[in-house]
Length: 186
Image 1 (tube, one colour):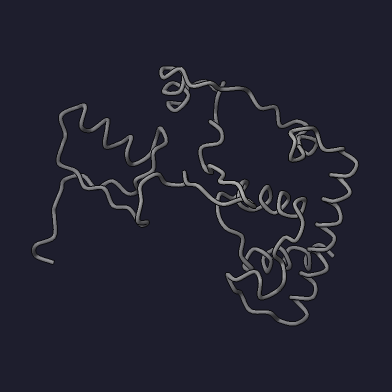
Image 2 (cartoon, one colour):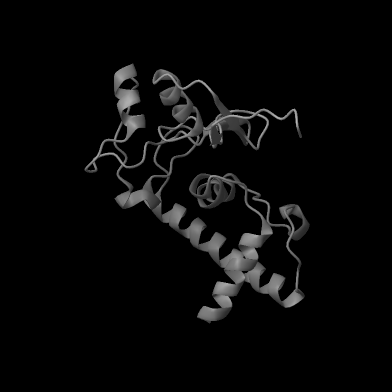
């Protein structure tokens, strides 16, 4: 370890948002501080920004929205987007459960979407109860407990509930946590 690089400033993470490691490095460099070290846990820069396969389509994740717009202080990412002339739009999530579209881009009938969602949640609850009663150990392979989405609607619900909302991959520890909550509630 004697030959390890030493720097007066260590930046944790190489994400690209307004308050991330790369932004911090940029601000330091612009202010004459060039002696810093960026530590990144993954094999790439970008933080949560990445591409994932969603069915047969490649979807950009992590940079789908700019949070905190319209507050007392301006979000630095919003300022960058405005400065670069990036097209943006305001998303009203008041009726998010109705913002479901089919493959052709037409609005998916809200009744069918709501029914599909309810069936998926009810099915998940039953599977959770089964996992709990069988004392299934935590596993990151969801196919082991047959929870992989089987239809486009199930895939969309899974994406919204896990990948999009939690910015990460679904795994059974979430199911076990949910089972614990259900046990307390019922």
